[in-house]
Image (cartoon, rainbow, N blue to C red):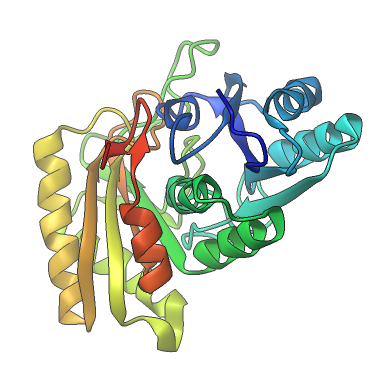
Length: 290
């Protein structure tokens, strides 16, 4: 039951990334999710209907990953609804500036961090303007990069999206199987973590140090043991470069169907965002403090 006067939070996008986004509907995160077909943006009427369902009078915030179809359809949904809706866009991927589905950087695993922190603030009564500013700030403090050992297989296609050798790895891959920076021979976890974390910290520039949240996210087919190996390597690189990992998360949170691989996300934390990250959450995909 939605609380009157609470800003409604909605996110969505193509299916195939579970538990994003439907798995994050609940206390302390989203109020509704709009899933489309696999790797396909949901339709504008879905967004309009979701906005109607969660609008209790305080307005609605759309959290949208930076893909052209998502942006277009969410904007059309906003116009169709005629409600007080503000949109924030996530674009945390540092691997490439422009890819198959996006103009500019892709929105990837950092989207979940934005949803959690903004969701906590909404639960505590923040208004629409404050939530939009907070979400934009968290996105700016968050960077990600991924690698893939295999392609994903879209059910409608029935075959892998791209071919890759058993001894190869795609560096900088997106969450739909989009190409990354380059294809090369398989490397150790230490070498991959060094490159991925270096790219993230370089992108942060002078703001690379301080307290951070480290998320090592699986793409759907990577064993937990391997994700923890990558976490250990990434944490060692981060702390060797002056960052302090004060919060961690390891597992499958933003997946790509059956792809083997993972991403590293680093989100810089301050007192406010740390408090909101720690706030209670109770969803199918994320749960603590309740």
